[in-house]
Length: 86
Length: 162
Image: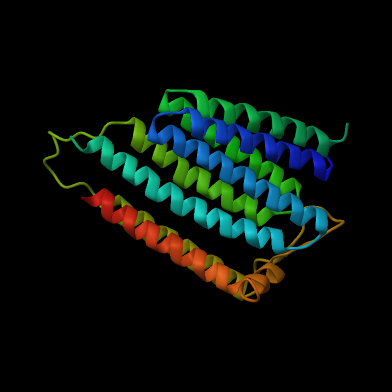
């Protein structure tokens, strides 16, 4: 397993997430696409940390995870609220 | 093909197929399950990249955030027949989670749980160094992200309770 292979995987995942975000019309579908893009970004950070033998990438990945959790909490609560509203 | 390459091939294929299914499927339950499979396969990749803490965090988030959200979005809540107050399950879960966190902190403080763990013997994984990094020159970013997640959770809870 090389670093380039994992970076390519991250790029493919980001492209899939971007495609879903641009194509889907529902709010939940777009949120799922953004979550996939967040996962691709985290994978890229972790791969860079392993490639450079530094922990800075993992620290950045933890911060991205926190932002992704905040995004998911706000987004899903808003979508659930919109679903409940008449 | 080594076992590491085999794990990468399987986890990579599952993550791509899961991501494509998650963003293209119209059924929320299937999309949520596919997103869960993607996150878990990425956790396997994180563990193989010598990041077991991130793998654990992703597994915990996938099991305790993605699954409840999928259930919440796909199972309709009964509105008309809610007569008796429900047991405070959320409060009990928060108490149990806080107790487990305190136990883990105490175990680390007393040396029962080693903070220097290693997935691969060639390169160790120093959790203490990561903590020093987050409290060092990445302190402002860590505080900002913590504030963001705290505000987001408060806003989400407030919005959901209305």
